[in-house]
Length: 252
Picture 1 (tube, helix red, strand yellow):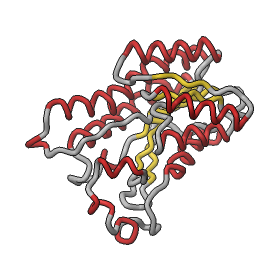
Picture 2 (spheres, helix red, strand yellow):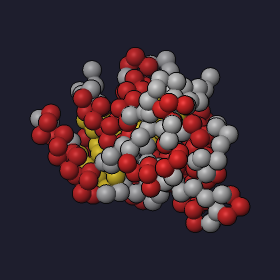
Picture 3 (spheres, rainbow, N blue to C red):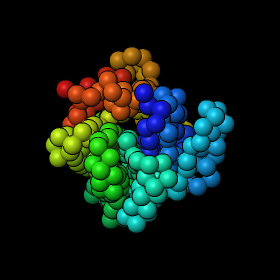
Picture 4 (tube, rainbow, N blue to C red):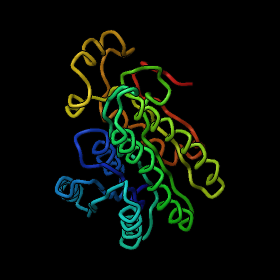
């Protein structure tokens, strides 16, 4: 049962994958901590879930690029709830610029959020999981980690590839201590925010011409895979990468 298990999700209050994961884990009985850089949004989602399920949900402001912020939030959650069983690293940032024209600011921010942020959250969550006897970590990467494409940009692709390597090493280091670490690589999971990153032509014909199932992805598609990976049913699964791309880029 998940009733007493604590799950923390980064960037969990937006309109996309993070909030879908929060809602799915809440439905599965986890005590979910909603973390986000946006205090109002995370507080509102936690309040909504508290009312919906009749049990308290916490929200915390978290900047995944700030080591002190990450350490403080992890320690606070463990102090208040008694432990940390699940971490879902969902925070991400992207700005598409050709490598020959890319600003150092774009490169650094993408790595800071997508790769270093994932590292920092694992760095400060793992000691609590090890002391608590185990846990499960799921890192949200992207098919850009292994796709040969200009669609995602060099910084984002490099960062997300780094997340996969980090996942494998963390799994190797911590498996014997009952901590499992896996990754999910979504393809196009639609939400309106993506319109700010990709041009309209990126979406044109995607469902008809690229997706093998005839539609684009929904945040709930990723949440379902995450829910499996943190469940007891995935107890023999670690160091793995699960694609959720509608067959656009199947990964074996």
